[in-house]
Every structure is written in C-alpha cells, then in structure tokens.
Amino acid sequence: MKKIIIFLLILNMGLSAQSLYLEDNFDYPAGDNLTDHGWIAHSGAGTNPIKVNNGGLSFSGYVSSGIGNAALINNTGEDVNKSLGVVINSGIIYYSFLVRVDGVSPGYFIHLNKNNTTFAARVFIQSSGSGFNFGISNTSTGTFGSTVFSIGTTYLCIVKYDVSTTGACSLWVRTEAQGVPASEIDAGVPEVTSSGTGQTGIVAIALRQYSSTQNIIVDGIRVADSWLQAPLPVQLIFFTAQYYNKNIKLRWSTSTEIQNYGWEVERAEMNKETNKPSVWQKIGFVKGAGNSNSPNQYEFIDNSVLFGNYFYRLKQIDIDGSTTYSSEVKIFVGQKPQVYDVKNFPNPFNPSTTIRYELPESGNIKLSIYDITGQLVKTLVDDYRDAGIYEVLFDGSQLASGIYISVLQGNGFKVVRKMQLIK
Image (cartoon, rainbow, N blue to C red; front, top):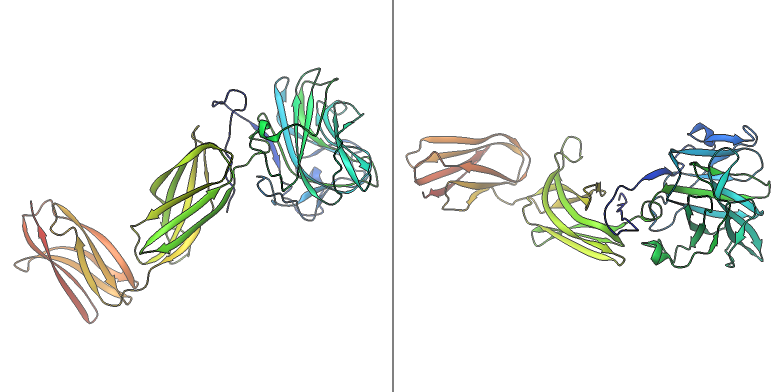
C-alpha cells in the first residue's frame, strides 16, 4: 500500500501553502555516486565520492521509510549538496532524515548550505561509552545532548532551524518505538538546542565526510517549511476487502490524521484480458477524522457487487483539496450461479427497471424484451458472456403500461419472466 501524507499549518492551525522543498530516498542503483543523481560536489570533488549504499533504512510511520537505498558516509574526501530549488532568507526550515551510525568519529555529517563554505544547522555525533551522542550547531563546534544512543540502530532525526543571523536550531531524535510525532508540541523537548552565528540565504542540504573511521548511513531526507511536511506522514495502517453476507466490507485504519477531509471509495472491475483494473468509479464517501493523534478505524459496505473480480482503492482528500491514492486491494465476489435465471427489480416498475441475469456457463446469449402479444420490443444483450451475474437497465419510458416478457436464451436453454410496467 502506498503511504498517505496529510498536511497541517503549525502556527495558525489553518490552511496555507506549505512547501516540501526536497525529498531524497536514494532510490538509485547501489554503488552509484550521489553526483550521478543531482547532488553537487562542493569540496574534495572526485576524492572518495559519497556512494549509494546497498539497502535503505526503515522506520515505521515515516513517509520516506524503506524506499530505495541510502547514502553511505564512510571516508574523507568529497562533500556534496543538493539544491532546495529556492533561496530561503527568513522563516523556519525543518529537515528530517533516517540515520544509522555503524562507526563513530566525532564531527558533523549533514547540514544546510548557504554556499559552498557557509553552513547552518549542522548535526554532529561523538562517542559516549559504548554508544554516541547527537549534537547540533551553526558552527563547527557542536552542542551535544546527554542521551547515549546505540550503534547500529536506526533513528529518525528532525531539525528545526530559524533562518536568521541568530539562527536557533534544535534537534529531536526518535526511536522507532517512540514513533513519528504528529506535531512539534507532541515531539516534546528537543534532544539538544543551539543558537548563534546563524545564516540566511539557505539554498541546499549537504552531506559531509570527515573521517576514514566514520560509518554513517543516511536515508529519507525531507526538507520543508512545516513540521508536517518534513517528518510527519499519516500512514494507512491497513486496507482490506472481505466478502461478507453477499456484500463487500472494506475496512481501513490510520495512525494519525491532520486536516483529513475524508475518503472517496472507488471500485473497478477486473479487465479479463489484462487482469488489471478497468474503469475506476466512485461508489461512496467516508468522512475523515480531521485532526487526530490516535488510531482511527473506518468501514464501508459495498452492496452493489455481482459475481466476478473487483479492485478497490481509497482516494484520500485533504481539506485543501489535495489528494492521495491508497494501494489497491483485489477480491473475488461470490460463487458462480447454479442455474440460468433472469429477474428484474423493481417489479412492477415505472419507468425503468434493472434486469439481472445469471449464467452458470460461458457462451453466446441473448436477452430480449417482448410485449404481451409476442412482438419484440428491444434486444438488450446479444453477445458472448463469461459465466457470472450481470445487470442491464431497461427503460420503459416510451412504452405503454402493461405486461412485458423478458427472455434469456442461449445454447440449449431459455428462461422467460414476466415484468409489469405501471404508469
């Protein structure tokens, strides 16, 4: 299943334009240089270039988890940066990333760039007992937190930087058990905060090599102007379809929701030639929880399905109108009919009725409507059909009230039913 991202305005609790400046999940071939994929060397170009690691990092609930590979920082030499596509002179920047430290050497390994020599919001590590500490600073001297983190464990780091000459910067570090905080308030007190010697004119995010004994894997980098665009995804925990009492029961659950208007439920029949969805149709809507930091359960009953294979998906809609699709679920509906049959509902009808016909075997069939005198009124179907249950609409708006006959016939069978049109 594809993952769902929902956005929130942190400061005003309303809607405004929010920007995800950069996302890099290092979904590139292992062994490639980062400079082959949009990163630019700004120091030590060509010397021990930073490469794509074979295998990425995962962190439950993080939108950029488990996608592609990662970046391996394990030497001295080339440092690289990737453009944000804008010049940021004021406001707040958030950036988040996954990191696993397999070898500790003191120094900073990721930061924001003003230019090739002027940096801000640098994230550091240093040894501490059998583990290490994280630190942050705008300068080359880090301010460190007191928590001892474990070698070889994946953490989610979230950095907040006030783009100014004073440049306060804060670092939150989360374990997978702690999860992804829904807001800055929920994240609590940062692991470490530093200020002074800030920079404006931020244009890029950068990775730095500084020691042959460092071994740091970085993945899932996101840079944005709001907390929700940087670390927070709203993840669809599960989405299932179940054949239940001749209906389809759809169930899904979310872990967190921010500004979630709701879901449109869509269905498509399986194309028998490609075994893929044919035409998607909206069949219902389920209202979302809006803002919620706890799991929510949802359910939708589709009572209009016939025999066959179907696909379902959810179209998640934010309050600002942006949309995201879930992954698809496929389900087989019902059992093949045991006998040939045709019936209509409602009956009596005015002016139209739905005719349902059931075929236990595949073959060429014809479905026709006659009046009480035996005169053909209309042939609704004259074609090959696979075994299954089908429906077709019959419009009697141009006909007089009375008894009509529906006739389903094919190779060796014929089924006749009366219908009554009352105007």
